[in-house]
Amino acid sequence: MSDFIYNNNFNDNNSNKEPIHFYFGEPKNKGVSTRVVVLSCVLCSLVVAIIFSLLGMWYFNAISASATPDTPNEVHTNNIYNSPESSTTSLSNGAAAKSRADIIANIKDSVVEIRTQYVVSKGQYIQSGAGSGVIVGDYEISDEDTDKVIEQGYHIITNAHVIADAVSSDKSAITVTLTDGTEYTASVIGSDEIGDIAILKIQETKELTCATFANEDYQLRVGDEVIAIGNPLGQLGGTVTNGYVSALDREIQIDGIKMNLLQTDAPINPGNSGGGLFNLRGELVGIVNAKSTGTDIEGLGFAIPSADAKSIYENFINLGYVENRPTLFVEYDMTYKYGVYVTKVLTRETGDNSSKLQLHDRICSIEIDGKVTDIISTSQLDSIISSLSIGQEVKLYIRRGVQYVHVTVKVYEFYI
Image (cartoon, rainbow, N blue to C red; front, side):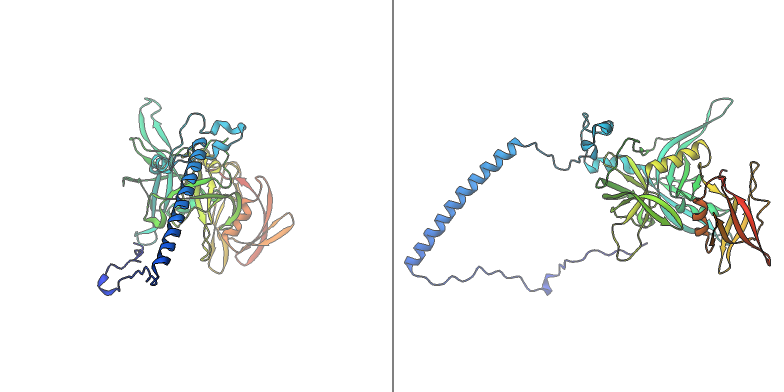
């Protein structure tokens, strides 16, 4: 468990403290005539003060009576101020504004805790990490012959980096925990490192709370208030924080991959990754995935826009892969101090680079449109490949054994 301390700024041990003394002040010894003058002045001042107070109260009440009252603890979404073109997303059409507590009560159960474990040696499970996820839909699998439902459950969206260790291990476990403490063993439908989105599924027949994606015509704006719900530190599931949208399309680079993300000042901590960022309508507007780690920096959190997350989710569900993801159809890894080496060459009936690349090839550099870039890390190579166009040809400089060779490879669309 993490260490927590109380904000112990009150000491109740009165026996060791001096009492606090208050002094009204000792009046000077004045004559009778002076006291009468002073008393008269005080009475006059009181009368004047009372008159002005009554006039002020009358004026304030008159102004208040002509103004529209504002109910405490009500929220007014950005939709009240939307242009007519986006009036379909407005709550002003007869829908009552809800308090933040009501909004959170409706959406909090859609956010889950995620724990991952994976085998590192000798068959021992080692805790790999923890994060968050959001339930976004249900599913059913039926027998084709009898139409009988043989499996049903729910889809959960999270970050690819939350489950990366589990996906890369031959033996792993992913556990999903609901807000009521119910635990499930989850399986992976798909994981997209470029978009940092992964889709899990759990089997469950009872009704669970699903988050609702914000409509395409919903216009999120800088300054809109948002609510983040997640599992900070991997131990505090269901934690709610709030803040404002700081930017809508911030380009940042994470592990060599450029992403365009929402920026928010809502407090984001390790373990929040994969959790939901909601608007004041209770709709999902982002999947939390990053924050600044600088010790002197605060209020810099980031989230994948819900439209991007939803697109990846639908691709995995409908196609089994994410469209327009460039790949060389090889796997590679970083060997300490020695460079990036090919660890697996994949083959596909529709085309691959298996005739060009071999196991244990070291990728030294890549040439694109006449420009040569030395390869120093897998994240750098990931970033370069993700920027390529499907069908494009590039040249790789390879060290194979004791020889250096160059090969021309083709960029394909990744699919399973």
